[in-house]
Image (cartoon, rainbow, N blue to C red):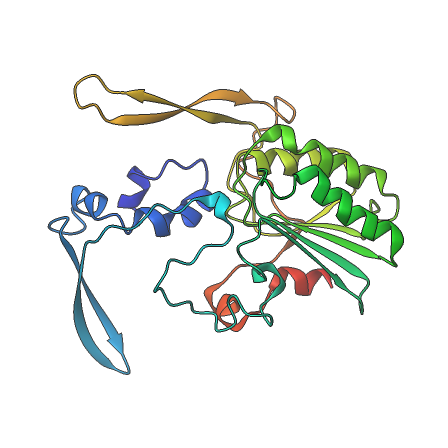
Amino acid sequence: LQKMHDVIPCENEQFFKYNLHYFIRLPEILAALKITPDADAVVLTYIKNGTESTIQIKAEDCPEYAWYDGIYLPKGWADAYDNFKKPASALWLKEPAKLRYFEYLKESKTVYVRHVAVVERSDETLIDYFEKVFRFVDSNEVDKFVLDIRLNSGGNNYLNKSVITDIIQSKKINRYGHLFVITGAATFSAAQNLTNELEKYTEAIFVGEPTAENVNYWGDVKIEVLPLSKLNVKLSWLWWQNMDPRDKRQWTAPHLAAEMSFENYKAGYDSAMNIIL
């Protein structure tokens, strides 16, 4: 893990933690860092039921995961959570292919909204989606509003405005103790700016884990081709100063901490929603 820090371009430990699973399965990186002897295969030793065994996993092509495709599970892969993609899934995992999902929890009078990426889809714009959500809020008995951006790795900063203004205008939910925002190790880029705006202009209580980015940060990517190797290098070139210039925070920390652990994921237990409710 210490060696992986050399290749994962992180501003804080949250981004490192969230992106580790991607980088640690690239055989070229494992070989270059001398974690494995070559890039053709990885040999793993594991203990199951008290017995030690070894397995060799050969390198194979795998399409790169696009963060704006929703919650993604490659074909043929197993998932530790038995109810993944099933109607009985935990709220934050329901209908995983959708970038946005909302549900009304009648017993607690709570509107829950999962917002996975600050991007548009052709079938429904982000503005139209949140207008629909707030029409529901206005016409129903709603006591709590939860915006879940724990899996939101960003997109277009200029699409955040409609989310923020809709929340600000809703006197029903923009009150301390009634508006909650769930953040996590994937909350990054445009989602960090959304977090900043919600912190500045609303009565939101933040729940979950710290975000994956500094509150002021370098963002947006342009590609430079190195002249000799012809390798592509992605450079963050645009300074986003969204908070006070003296604000040196490495992340936005939650008011109410709720860890995303493997045990909770496997059991379908959402500690953040549990604290909110």
